[in-house]
Image (cartoon, rainbow, N blue to C red; front, top):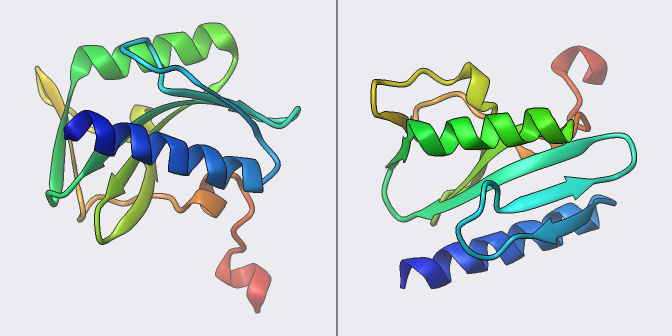
Length: 128
């Protein structure tokens, strides 16, 4: 069941990114990243998670693989978490604190929206 929910979340994020003008490649199975997306100007290496819980723990080694792959690829590493019944939240893994074994992501942690991640969200100063 978790695999299906995760794969469904990946496909949903593919559609969202494509609607924003990105070409997206989904890497099914256990690879270094779930999605690679680019629009000619920006490249994203994305690890996608979906949870019904209010918090999520990610192994440090999985996040390190994402960061290393993104560095070699020339992309921006992104953790994309779909909190079921809450919505998508995006995180820069280099800005997250972690323990010896895992990263903890919960609903209280500061996050980016998709538009914020893509640099398309206007600030309050721009609106005023």
